[in-house]
Image 1 (tube, helix red, strand yellow):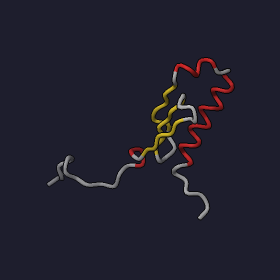
Image 2 (spheres, rainbow, N blue to C red):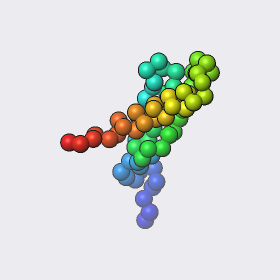
Image 3 (spheres, helix red, strand yellow):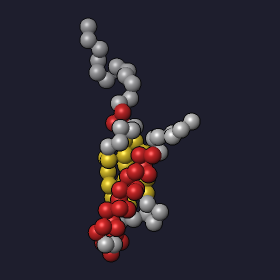
Amino acid sequence: MAADPDTRTSAPRRSTVQVSHSSHDGAIAVVVTLDGQVRDLQLADTVTTRPAAQLARDILECIHSAQALFDPGPG
């Protein structure tokens, strides 16, 4: 007999473990999964005043900071 899918237990999928991180000013917020995928990106209206190159750097910095929260680094 097959197990009922609602009652089976399994290890959590890597994509369900996630962390959120916001920029220092709160204008950029990201959610990143354990495997490094960006699940959500939110931008405040205030980011429209930033030059495009700066906005791109700020978004990437926020993503990398979130990803680094999963990396314990050298022991």
